[in-house]
Length: 314
Image 1 (cartoon, one colour):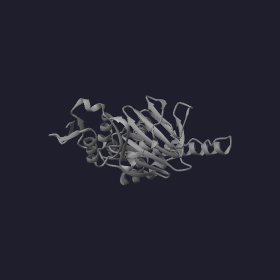
Image 2 (spheres, rainbow, N blue to C red):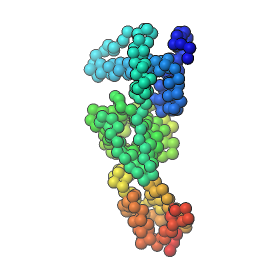
Image 3 (cartoon, one colour):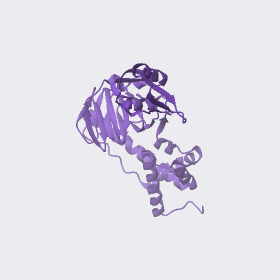
């Protein structure tokens, strides 16, 4: 590196690069290793990133302050004086060393926290003040604290508990839900998301239609539809390691049970698909499920060469 001087155009270009990195980090689409390599390649990169991140935080604080004014009935928003380039650079330079040496507090502030579960695993995380998430099997979720907090459901299923005075943006492949204090169950199904409202309520982005306790909303491609809710207790039964069946087919039962099993259960006799099942079964111990099939329907379970289980008639 020949020196730290730069032209106004070079500085503007670095600011644009830093803004693009911050947006990608916030969206969760950034290659983190590539970002860190870019930041550490030149101290000017680190300074530009701090400048952009600081401005982002200032704007977010302004948005929250204006929201408070609106709720209090005060008409005039807060309009800050536009900071000059020199002021921003002075602030950025004062923390540039901390960014380079300390690993980049601005990057950590922009990045999301995340949690995952393996097949058959469950986990509970206190994601933010007033926000608790239960992760079902084979789930990936990330979040950022704030007003409101934001949660990205990227894979699997979660139960959400949101305390009083808190709000949540739930972002899914099917669209974004805006939720009030309450309890919710969100599960991805293909490219969409099924949200069961156990208590509380909210709206779906782009619509004014309210969803409330007892509703099950299906979000897909930015559109929302409501469907008749089954027994809501069965939706959250996974939090007690159980699967509740009320006359569903064996095909359906196996699809649900196999979510929790590394070695899957498959049907070896097509006629078995028409069987209808009822009862409560453990998701952590498939042996009782298989025993019920044998006792009630004369179904044999045989371990296959690959470790899976094949169902046939006795």
